[in-house]
Image (cartoon, rainbow, N blue to C red; front, side):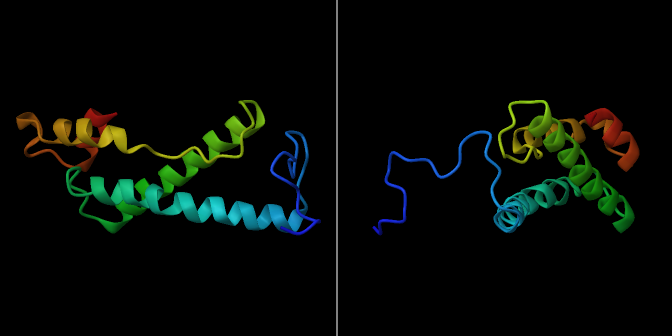
Length: 119
C-alpha cells in the first residue's frame, strides 16, 4: 500500500464529515442502483397474486414503492440514526401477502379489493 492511503486504523471520513460533492454523487448513484432492483422486484413479484392487469396500476405500485422509500430514507437520514442507507421494501411480507391473496373469499376480487386486504 502507498503512503498516501490510510492504514487499517485510520478512518477516511468521520461521522460528521461530508465527502466532496463528486464523491457523494457517485456514492448516491451506487446506493440507487443497489436498491433499484429490489424496489422494482417486489411489485413485479406481487403483480400476479394481486391480479394487476393494467400497466398503469403496476406503474403506480412501483412509483409508490419509490416514493415511500424516498420519504423513509429522508426521515431516517435526517432525524433517525443518520446512517447512509436506503430504506426500501422488504421481502419478508411476500409470504403473508401470498396467503392473503390466496384466500377463497378473494377468488373473484380485483386488484383494489386484494390490495385493501393486504393493507
